[in-house]
Every structure is written in C-alpha cells, then in structure tokens.
Image (cartoon, rainbow over all chains, first blue to last red; front, top):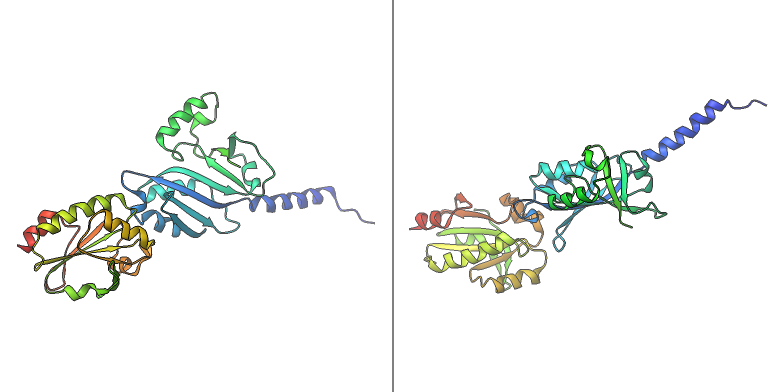
Length: 165
Length: 129
C-alpha cells in the first residue's frame, strides 16, 4: 500500500488551517462617533460606511448615538477601516465595539489587555487604542497600561482589546 | 421649487409649492438634532417679527418617530407650518433637496427660485424688505 508522504499531510493540514483563519472576521461593528458638531446630524458617516464593499447594512440608533454596521461574510476587514472611514467623514471614533469570530483575535495583531478568551461563538471586543476611544479615555488608559510595552508603542497595526462577554 | 406634498402636524396634506407668490424658507430638522432645536427657538423669534404676507417658513422634519416630532414642536412652541417626511436622511424630500446635514435651510423667492442656502436672519430680513 502506498503511503501518503508526510509533507503532503502537513500541507493539507496547513490548507485547512489557512481556510479556517481566512474566515476569521468581524461580523458587526458598533461605532459611536464624536466630533465638533452633532455626529448624528450629518449623513456623512452613514454614506461613507455604506460606500464600503464589505458593508451589508448600516443602522443608526438615535437613542444611543450608535452606528451599527453589519458586514458581509468572509470579509477580512481590520478595525482600522472604521477609524479611517469615520475620520474621512470628518468625525472621530468615541467607541468601537466589534462582534468577531473567536479565531480572529488569535492573530498576532490582537493583544488582549482585559477579559479572557472564552467558549462563546462570537466575541464582543472593544478596541482601546488611540483613535478608537475618546482622547480623555485614552489618557486614562495610557496611565493604566503604562507597564505594557506594546500599548505605549502606538503601533497602528496592533489592536489592544478588551473582551466584553 | 420642488412640488412636495407631506403631512402636517395638524394632519393635513400640504404641498410646499402651494405657497408660491411669496418668499418661502424651508427648514430641515429633526427632534434628536441638538443644533436644530436651538435653531427652532431662533426661527420662532424671527418668524414673529416677519410679515406673513411676504414670507412663509416651513419646517420639514425627518424624524422617524412621529410622537417625538410632535412633542418637539410643542416644546419649542413652533407656530409656523410643520411637515413630516419620516425616513431620516433617506426621506424623499431630503434626498430631493440634497440634505446631508441638519439643520439645513433653503430660501426660495416669490417666483419659487432658490436664492440662498442656510441664510442668516439678516439676509432673510434684507431680502424680503
């Protein structure tokens, strides 16, 4: 009987692993925006978000001043896409809470600073980096995480997250 | 001036073009828009000083919640015409006027031609006198 060479088994395993991680994704983003003027009084953020290819729907909750963005399956968006587009519309992010597949935060770009990985099917995470919280909150966070090397690096490719569920 | 028929706060169907023959100021707002609510109070004061045979002020709200709209009208003591197009920024009238920010004002002259966008009180007074 012929045996399958070990390297093929390894390649096969890697392919499966790759397929699994490529599905790692953000399902939903809840964005609270801030700025000099009333963020909900402008249609700019809504329009900007809706123009993105991976955006399925944008809902606006006027009671909580939140934009809830539903994203298409199998997208590979990074949290930075929300920051960039809210800023493009002339506003800033006050808070960003993402609903994600647990595999996503296993990626090296994500650093958990609060909360624990758990068995939930979807995780709710908040991004705590500069530009993802209010300036006032960020100042507090810098003091709190002063011993974290990466938090104070302000590397834009690193996302420091708090797991909420 | 676009011919748009909407429901008023006293439950009548009103076409905004039916007031043509005098200046018409269209004010887009919503109850949840803070700057609009401040603007309402200023507009109420301004309207009281204007000659109603020369100008009509029409508020168009894009509130999705009719009760919140009616409450706001009551609270801000607005006594000029109030119409509702209850679909947020997707409201047909808002799209037709190209409203992307609240508040937004459009001043039409007696011939129904748009003469100013977001005019100041002074500009309005100077134009109609």
